[in-house]
Image (cartoon, rainbow, N blue to C red; front, top):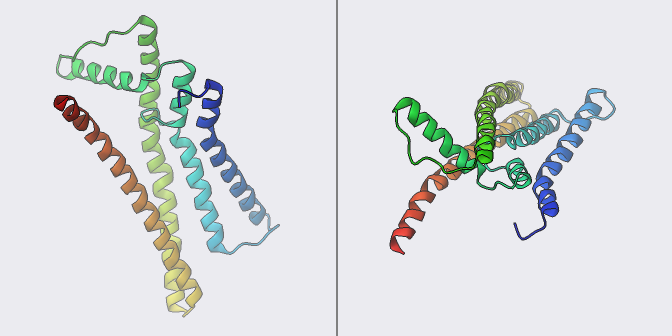
Length: 210
């Protein structure tokens, strides 16, 4: 990637967010048209579009989780020409916490004054990213899923009681899709964390063998 000219790299990093914004915008316009009764949509499809819009916005918000190497991170690190700023920030925070809790620290980082100022600034964004992920979880993820499951179970019960097969099937379908989506999200995140934890051990093993 670094063989590509910086201007083109920044465009590549931005491409995903541009796609997310485009999809979210189309979804919002569609929902607005339904709310104004300009077009008609099946309630199931309306809920589905709501979910897509939410996921796209959460995907955009995810870019600002500064404790991860997201597209925003690569854009930022490329602009300031500091590719290891996240790794160095984590080391700085670990050393700071060790100094506070255990009155000790690991090897002191040999950094220039300019880089140290950058790290202090980025550590604030790093901490902000941690808070954002918890805010997103409690204010968006849980409420929207509770709402979707509540609506789905209502549809299932109504369909079962009134013998409306279509209503019953819609409720079951939404529950299955939502459960699959949540399971996939947790699986991918667990896999990412697990792979990240294994990486240092793998590198150490390969170093010792060489």
